[in-house]
Image: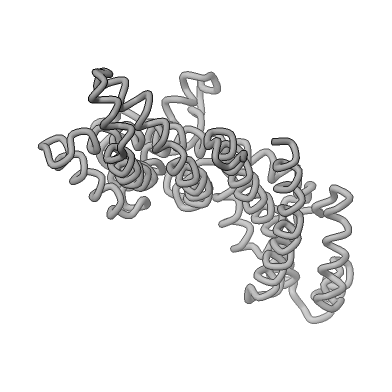
Amino acid sequence: MLAYTLKRLVLAVPVLLGLTVIVFLIMAMIPGAPATAILGSYATPENVERLNRQLGLDRSLVEQYFIWLTNLLQGDFGRSYNLNRPVIDEVLERFSATLILAGAALLLCSIFGLLAGVVTAVRQYGWTDKIVTFFVLIGISVPSFWLGLLLVLVFAVTWRVFPASGMFAIYGGGDLPDLLHHLVLPAITLAVVATGVIARLTRAAMLEVLRQDYIRTARAKGVSERRVVYRHAFKAALVNVIPVIGVQAGFVLGGAVYIETVFQWPGIGRMLVTAISTRDLLLVQGGVLVVAASYVLFNLITDLLQHLVDPRLRS
């Protein structure tokens, strides 16, 4: 297990290095000059040239990349042009809020997706299967941003059950109950699509396992149906479902960008939208790199979990 972990960590290094190249090139192709966006009405040719020289933007792209990469390896993500604070401080502060939202959404979609998949597989072609499958297809088909606006309209504006935006109340908030109260709508919105995906693939994996000979043998020996389903079938199906949950972890992390915008959640997605509009390149590069590296880390953890659960991979 240790050797496999070290091997996966070594393979993650070129992936992360490739990510730095991709992130840097994408930021370089964004139209608009950062110096012009920073200076605004004072963007005379002389001022723009002077600021580009101060920021190092007058160098070639190759030089800029290697300077940025060298600073990254030293733990220096640079300084935000507009916020005038270290990029890493701003990114980590916002990323913690995104992790809360994405973690809650991943927990919801894992629980309800696995449960829906198992129930529909056990009740195949029954009314439970048809009803749950119908709602799963709706959940997959509905755009998340539209669902978020709909939930705000119904539960925040019309019924006033949950707040429409923010992470805490402006006055008298800041505790855990207040956080959970604000978390309900964005977490549900972000979890709906992932729940549908996990449910469908769990159902397919369960149906494949339930047709195996050892399942029929267990039933013939008089093992209870509950034990057959949850002790034997679900455990075997989970091997194929774990990678799907890992992929959905990346999905909810990426989907948090527009969900945070809809619900005004102070996470890294909302930060990136603002930074792109103001051409704050170092802040965008740092934020995108942290999100991409987290996605790689989630896939690494998923591979290790699958390796731990499936004894065939350890042989």
